[in-house]
Picture 1 (cartoon, rainbow, N blue to C red):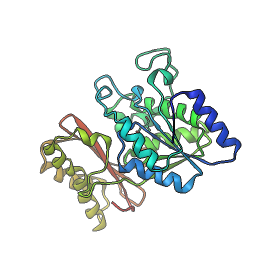
Picture 2 (tube, protein in one colour):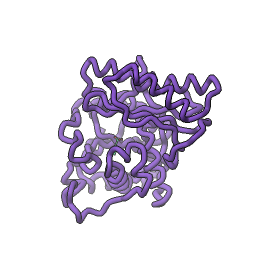
Picture 3 (tube, rainbow, N blue to C red):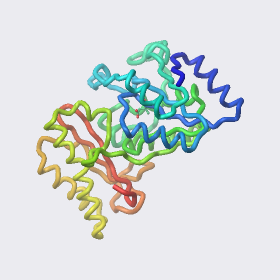
Length: 288
Ligand code: PAF
C-alpha cells in the first residue's frame, strides 16, 4: 500500500488509474478505524478495481468546544489495518496541505454550504459541522476522483448531506451508504466509543435498546411517530446517565420530521454519555 501525503502526488496516481481505465472506490475516514470502516473497504474492493482510503482529521468539521485536539489518532495501527484489508493507496495529508490558508476561523476560506439540510438532525446540535464535512469531502472528491465513495449509514445525516451535494453540484461519483456495523451487544461501532468509561460503555447500549423498542412497536403495527419516539424515550428513562440530544423520525433525504413511519423512513437517536455524543439509527424496513 502506497502512503501519499501530497495532493499533487495523489492526483498523479488518480490520473494514472483513470488512464488505465480502472474504477476507483474511495473510503474517506478520520482514522481511529474499526470494523465499520473495514466493511466499507471490503465493499469497495468487491465493487471497484482500486480502493483508496484517506485518513484526515478535518479541523473544519469540529466546533471550538468539540474534540478535535483529543480525537484519537492511531495512524500506525490504522495504516496496518488498511494495508491488510487490501487498500491500494492511503491518502493522509496534513492540515496545512489541505488548508494552506488555515482551517478554522479564516473568514477568507471558500466553503461548501449545505443549505438548510446542514442544520437538521446532527447539524442542529453541531452548527457548522456539515459545512466542514461538505467542504472537505468536496476537496477529497476532486483530489481522488473516485468512481464510487463509501460511507457508513450510522452517520445518516452526513449521508443525506453528501448525497445532496453530489446531486446539486454534479459530482461524477456514486455515493454508496453501507449498513451500520455493531458490537456483539448491539452498540453501533464508532471511533468515539473509545472515549467511554466502563460505566458509560454499559449505558451506551441505551441507544440500541431505545431503537429496538421503537422497532418492536412498529413491527406490532404501530406507525405513529409520536408513539415510536415515546417507546424509545421509555428506555432512556431507565438510563438517567444518558442525556438525549434527539429522538426523531425523519425523511432520510430531507431530514424533515415525519408523522407516520413507513419503510424507508429514518428513526434516529443521538445522546450524550458524559461528554461523548453518540448516534445510532434504523432505516425502517432494514435489519436493525
Ligand atoms: O465520517 C467521517 O469520518 C468524516 O465526516 C469524513 C466523511 C471522513 C469527512 O471528514
